[in-house]
Every structure is written in structure tokens, then in C-alpha cells.
Image (cartoon, rainbow, N blue to C red; front, top):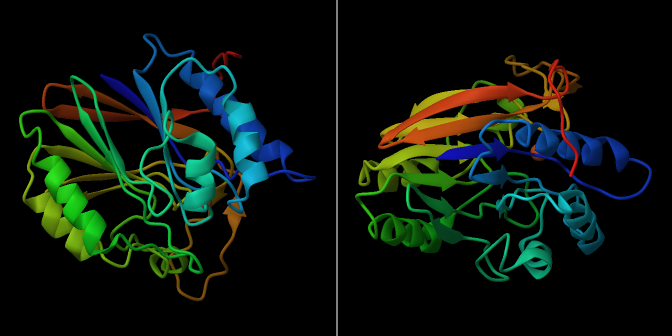
Length: 259
Ligand SMILES: [Fe+2]
């Protein structure tokens, strides 16, 4: 089982639309150069820049005829109701309140959570989604599980981003600790590649397909974006093992397909 994990495409419309759209298109094209193809793609949030309906329509255009299943996660730049209105039920589940849902493949269970909260760049899951996660993870304990959300649940040492992380990360960790078959937590938000132990499993944060955030670890350091390579993560699941590869896109001397 191969899962391509993309993040933070920030699709928009208007004069600034070209770069994020091209970034996502090239990343998806790079996915199609992998042999074999991944079984599915997960995009861990900030699908759009402002969560507007016309931006989700633009995202649908970029996805176009891409031939693999694509599972969408809501980020703080998204608006759940508009996301669900455009893509339910084929690329996102849940309802207008929360885009939280479960996909069951033979080799892995994917539980998607929605940490988007209107009016804040930070994220929160809340008791209802944590309870949903607990019950979903209890359904197939003999199959490895991935948990996907936008906001990292722990501090990573970038003060600007740590200030807008998941507020109930400790509660999420407590749920995960009860389910040792969770082999990865997939997140975005950081626009950087980060990995850490968390909740008895491993947290994998994917880079952005659009632009990366500077590794500014001092509180007084100015926050900014840097033109480091775009890319995505490839999670390879065999039995109850998961190995993660970083696949560069923008600076890679590799073919990129169209679709
Ligand atoms: Fe983002």
C-alpha cells in the first residue's frame, strides 16, 4: 500500500492563482511518475487560500482527470461547509459541520479529522471528534490505521507556527495511545517536512506543494516563506510497518507527467 501525502496547495483565483495551481499540478504529475502508482493521495489541508466556493471550483479543475483516489482534509485556510459542498461525497466525507470521515482500504484504515475553526489560524478537534476517532479506531484493530489532520498536535520549535498548532493535542495523544495499530499521524500546516514521536506513534508533516516556511526558531525572528523545494511524502505500508520517503518536486531532475 502506497499513499502519497501532499499538503498546503493554497489554491486561489485571480492574479496570484498561477503559482499554487502549478505547484499542485506538478506534484500530482510527479506522483504519476512513481512506479507503481500510489493507491491513493491524501492532501492534508489548506486546500484553498480563503475557503471560497470559487477556489474549490478551481481546485476541482486542477484535480481534473487525475486518475487516483484523492482524499481531502480541511485546513485553517479552508471553510468546511464550502469544501464539503464542492467535493462530498467522492473526495471528502462528513457533513457541513465537520469534514471528518473514514476510508477503509484492505491494507489500511484512514481516519480524517477536521481541525478547522472559523476565525482562528489555530486548530481544535473537540470532544465529539475525539470520540469519533476513538470509536473509528476501535472498529478494525487488526488493520493498520492512519490519522490525518491539518494542524500538528505538538510544538515543533517554530514559535510562529507553535502558536497556531492544535490546541487539544494532548487529548488527541491520549486517544492514540489507546490504539497501538495507528502507524502514522499525517499533518500539514507547517509548510515544512517534520517528523516526531507522538501518542505512541509517529507524526509525519508534509511540505507544501506551493511554498515552504522558513525554519525560524527564535521567537523574535521574522516569519516568512522561502523558495525551498516543493514536494510530498510517500508512505509505504507493508503489514504493520510504515516507511516514509520525501519526494521532491520543484527541484527534482525527474520527469513529471501530465493528466
Ligand atoms: Fe498552509
